[in-house]
Length: 367
Image (spheres, rainbow, N blue to C red):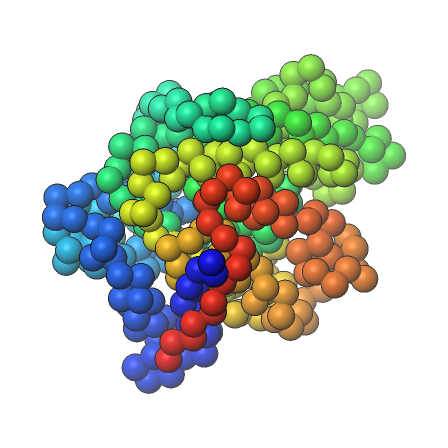
């Protein structure tokens, strides 16, 4: 059966700004049906790496927080520690990054909690009947919350083609160990002829798997590599991953983690996807590139599979921006494939197969 996906386009005018539209979408989600008085409610966001400006604003999170408070719920803003080196690897740095990016309790009207604890060790082994995992490592603060509302930035992604709600509840709700488990099949390599010996890859590698050869060029120790692919993100062009098999394996694993993140609150979750400022890369990077397509709008659903499918469809229908983005597969009909040469559909299809939702949807436009 198709799931309802409510949609507000990107055009704004008097009385119809982003916040007005988001408030209408929240009403359509019938939060009263999923939030009881006294319920702890995880407001899962991505508050962005330091230096990034593409993340969804804290004022949007405040709007969701207030809607939960009106129902008697106890909301908290949350995210997890990262696998890679950066400003969100351990909770003290992570929380300070959140505050510096605007997610202070005084702004969002809720506490800001790193869901997997000080070093990422606070997680629960959640059973899943998956192809790759018998259980998945879900952050304790998210697992034990009674309900969850997920605010996601729909955009491109190097490893999954697209990032949306499913990326936010799989990679985003996993402990660092879980993130590593998902990435374990990703093994990048260095093209020595293209390497300019800048050292950027060595700085971001959390496993110290990259060293310099005698000629100063980078080399990767595959026995130490944990597959996080951060080197690929920062490299000017010498490090790539052969995605023919790795991308689909990663995405299948993500679907199993998404199933684990929803466990115990399957009917008590809601999802907001912002298909605006649609950038090529994840908000995990410490920069924000120009958007590659025009804004589509905001989508809302109780179904994470449907909301991601609808987001991807709308983004693919949006016109390219005039910015000179380098397309890996210029002739591809799908914009995400053209951008990264990675098909985003395997993780959405796998999540549907795992019982996370349906790819069939009814798009309900609101005014």
